[in-house]
Image (cartoon, helix red, strand yellow):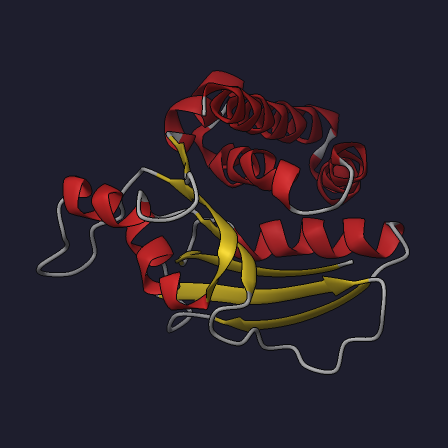
Length: 196
């Protein structure tokens, strides 16, 4: 088993929290994980990305080569496009459709979606709305993790247990809300899969 996952977004969207949950779940599954990350100028709005490599064998490199990512999980749609060259031919894109417009010339959502639809049935998620339904818009990163869960190769129950572990210090209500957000994203992903 080997999974190459690129997490992409902008500062403040919770990319590193998603990575921490996946890392914890990977270790709980007795798998090996390697991670490399880039923080965008350490500020809200700067590009953030993380390479996660998961395997049942030893891994020698933290970085994912172009054309070999099994999954691109993006919490911002333009950031999903930025990493398209890394996607494997049979790879999957799971992306939020909530734009964070932080530059002149940001393309229209129609242009972004047209490019994304050239890939293998992208999972498109209105993460902010689903997070609000789960209890708080700040849980949108867990909505996105849930939407990507069927493609990660780790049991959803293990990912949920890792969410609970990582959020328990903030209280049981916060942990439960993040698990609800995760389940909401997972349900959407399964619904989209049955529709295609």
